Image (cartoon, rainbow, N blue to C red; front, side, top):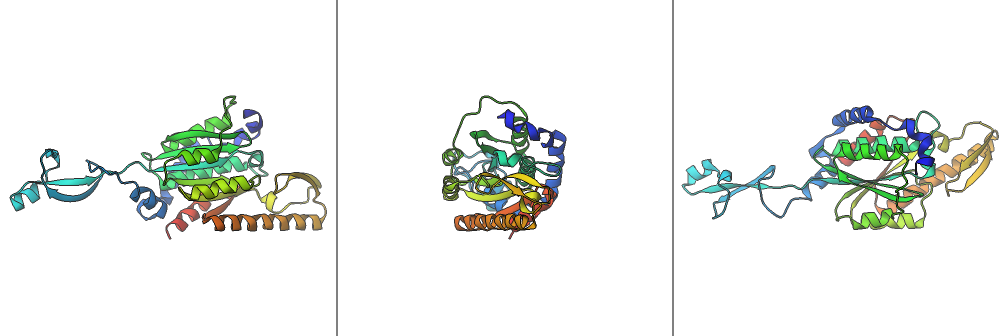
Length: 301
């Protein structure tokens, strides 16, 4: 995998940048008001009442109750022993599905789509989760899929950067659809890709994921892909994944290409709308904190 990822290694965030992104995300986080965070929190209460973090109620003492849970004020007022009952929450979990196909290695100004995807994933994770919560990552691409088991957000993202920065010969061709199907129901899953090489089978797996999980999507693109400059003859990857040569000196050619881009965007919109998946776009030249901030604000509605 490392052979074709070499071109973008210098664009990936290091530990210092990940820490800065985490600090930026602190300004975006409005934990109890974000619908995503509420879903993650409220839908994962344990069946067992224990000494958790959220007080739930007071009830009469029963044989075997922990005396450390005694509510002495209610006991004194009623003359009968009462205990406090707490609601125990399980850790929240998110799964990031990040595309590392060849088309994600493109970048015309400053960074690649894959490196920008990592930054956006970091900001999104840090914005809706806390360090005690867990993030898992599925890296998908021409090699198949590779899974980073759920762990703390910072640890998961740093493992991803290390994976993308090293030569690996142990990648197994796993199906990312199968990995999602094997996860417990009810996860929040965020797809991050340019969606240039997606085939019908990929869209079917995304649709299947929506039946089991809460799914969001982000499209990463480079401005050159949307509007070609005059650079002479250029070899491009088409929106169907097939390469082609275009003469960008001709305005008509550039206009035709721009029309194809808009058709691709419209097709994505229809796909996500049909699947009921909220989605956003982020450019390689944009400040990812601004785009992720808009995403977080939309999730509050």
